[in-house]
Length: 230
Image (cartoon, rainbow, N blue to C red; front, side, top):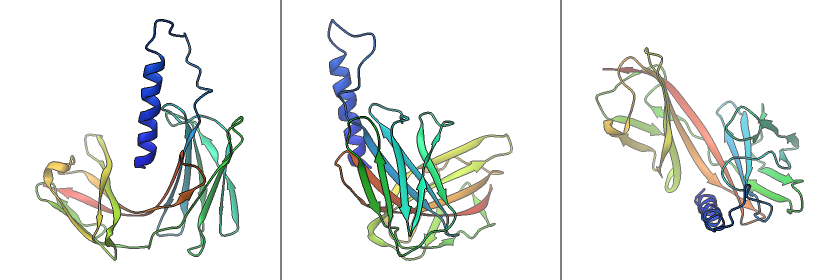
């Protein structure tokens, strides 16, 4: 994801420079800027997988081209998610195979060449603590433990909390070494007593693409549901 972020920042700087002159156009023409493409797979314990792709040249996903995904003999054409802030490509597989990679193909956006990407899933795992249905304290550090892993790999953690005052809290911006154990300090948590929460862990794996303007990543995603106590 870092490469994609740098590419986005580079393009934004180019746009700022291009618009800074006295002859600023009413509408900036993006035709000279190639699309950047992100491919993503979320795979869950039940075997199902969410598929997503984004093609963009400035900030939001655009409705440009088509995206197909092949996995274990299954072929899916992704549709557009028009409820998001952009128009990302989305799809779903009810069953998947552990012995086959996910192969994405993005094509059909004017003169830009097709882009392909391939990614395998990281090793599966389970969350050892806290247990699903348990109560965790909002006033104490949160301990997350999971099976397997290596300090050379990466795992993302986050949570979605729903509280009695109808507040919903989403925080999914944390990536740490995949050591099997982290202790999260209370100042990094936004939930409070009385909330219920899904605690998520995602084991991350990078793949390969046919273009330096593309990224691909898979996530083995797991979660537990807990209640937040005082």
